[in-house]
Image 1 (tube, rainbow, N blue to C red):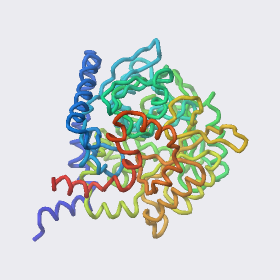
Image 2 (image 1 turned 180 degrees about the vertical axis):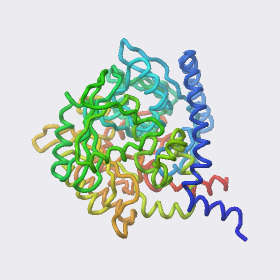
Image 3 (image 1 turned 90 degrees about the vertical axis):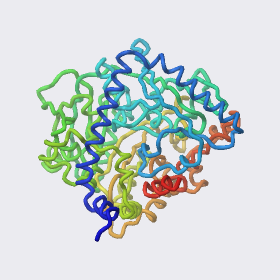
Image 4 (image 1 turned 120 degrees about the vertical axis):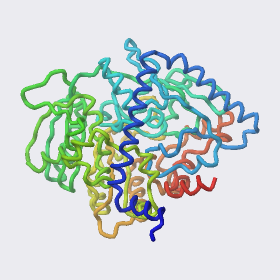
Length: 523
């Protein structure tokens, strides 16, 4: 007779799509509805700013208590490790002293200054909805609804407007942090400038982020999106780079690569009017095909095309399908019948997907599954596509151009690439590889270290939400630690309170969801 626990694991492993449909989607939908109501109430009644100072003082009190207790433990936020965007879970959450930083509101929209002030747990979905209603948007709106401001600042944020505005950190006008000393500091180009520059990518190792001011720009109703299929690698690279360097005409540039030689390059621009050259496509509607599937029709039909997408539909076009990774979890998720009946409930929440991982799916994921973003100088785009094809054969690949600014602003670990003559070539491309590679006998334990070596040799960067097998020495080769190290020495209690970034993001510090469940049950 099969034990109930064994039966449940069998269902989670071999019928995950059905389990996700029957159980995870309703839970996710209910949570999403609750969060939406909570955020609308807080914003409508303008209660968030009044509470903000009190909540920051609560953070300071927790740090003062830590100091009174001898400051023996390292510190981290109390936010659940299950909510991270990484496929792994941070192990340090089990041993560090947790500081509750429950700050999730939009505090102010200042249209005169062109600024929105937000707390660190405000999400992209929450902010984009609120701003678009008032005719504004962030210049850089990273894709998934549940991405938080704090995660995008302390970690990494890129989007298809980044060739024009840079990374998410480059649209930040100021940060407000609470240091390990218990001091509340505002950081900008004119105030605590060194700290302002080093906060991005620091993963909470310089202080607790409690607010940020983000630039906003006028939004228009639609994105006029031009789809151009290409059928050779040279055309792919050439069309993508020309579009990426034309920031005057292209507000958005994106590439979806379907094979080594086949891709669709998209160029988007804001507009308030629907032109006669294309039709309106509300691609964000629950019954619509997943975006990457829709894009591929232009490749299959061997023709260019123009569509007009509602602006928020464009910003979150990949959210319902988590780009294309949801197909591996719910293989029938893009079927017209499923979309018509349950498309409104997509996507299931990431923390629930992680929590229901089994030992079998863990082993398969660790060996065969890839979730990586590599930030490469655009001059090496052709070599990078070749590399992924030779060693991964994982498609689609996501291409998003980005300018790494050399403007004295907040740069963090990431610095612009300089040519031999000293000139700055600021254009990079984020190559997103998500899913199961098609290369025979693929083993991620072998492939990932080789990929990281390729990235270092070509002066690129690895997104730190993803898995890293880098040694500490190689990590410091990839990322510039000079200013970061000086600040950690200078800020009181900083080294005592916080790990280094490497100690928070390396594979030694993150474990599988299965291992985390076991440790949590063991107490």
